[in-house]
Length: 121
Length: 341
Image (cartoon, rainbow over all chains, first blue to last red; front, side, top):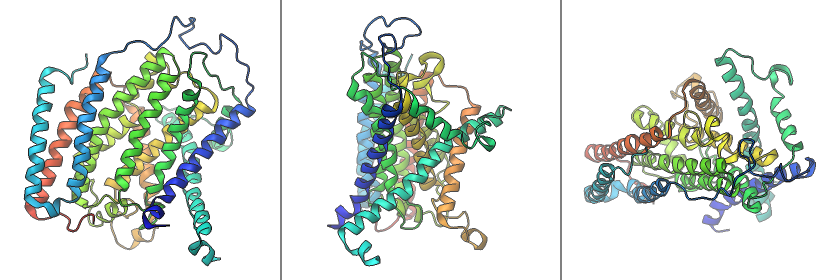
């Protein structure tokens, strides 16, 4: 095994073991549990009523907005990781470059804030 | 025998499997007893007894719960997407277990000592959102759907501040390796110089694991149980175990990033006699106790308050602190030299 593969091999082992344990647990309850489904039991739960209709409806656009904002800031964090680790070598120039990038992002953040994209009411 | 394990391929595979089991089995037992510990601690805080029937002080309660869940029927709602419905708890549980591959329990004792350990943990905890989202969508129930949406929005919101807090720690370490992060805290734990970040990380960890006071995705009074309202038997059990394993993982991250991992508080005689793994376990248990303590103390947040705290308080605060840390370290020449090679 090459060294990179050897480094990551335990991760694979953990993944396989976790899947086996989860599968065994799920399988055991399917095996030992007494399965007896009928129409009322398998209908979606709705506080004692029979379910009115399908749950897959339109939902608030704010959730979508949060996801978009998350992508922007998570990308920013992804850029920051290599920068943080190598800051001692890229020195002041690297620091100022990142400050320029963060400055642009902050302008966008302030704009979002003023436009009310971060409010949830 | 030693030759077989260290120098042959099959021997190394067996060794790795045994090492992994040496982490996973105690972890699963710990998770099972965390559920009991939570009930006991909360009972004590509310002047009740808690579970006390099964075995002395209720210590067999965890096994009684397991047997009950095994013998229950796995109800799959008629409107649900069967494959995704069963896949969601599977995913949540497997991810929570897999993340433990990189946690170092002593100097160099991480089972997978990879050089991007922090990124790995961040990636795994980000994937956790999928389990919740898939469960909410696949159940085809209104409560589950709303709970899943809420959980997803909440988890991604707090992940941004978690990422920024981790970046501030990395600035002071100069490496993504978890072993190096702990070793960098030999002189002072990061919870002292970065105290505000420590608090932000801890609160974000509460939000990330959907714990009180941020347990809106499963808020009983409005969403019954949120995204796992339709689950039963061990499909529910896997979610339950996965969530508690995530609490363990987040406590482990707090311990490693801020509380010096396996290091004793002071490197002098009486403290150094206690082996490193015990220190790590003690720190993780302390964090878990605080998780439960917080749950017994604070009322639930409103959803708009939750989002405001994440986006308008934690995000700017952690961003400013990160920039200040970088500037301070650069100006004083205290940046760790070398870094990742």
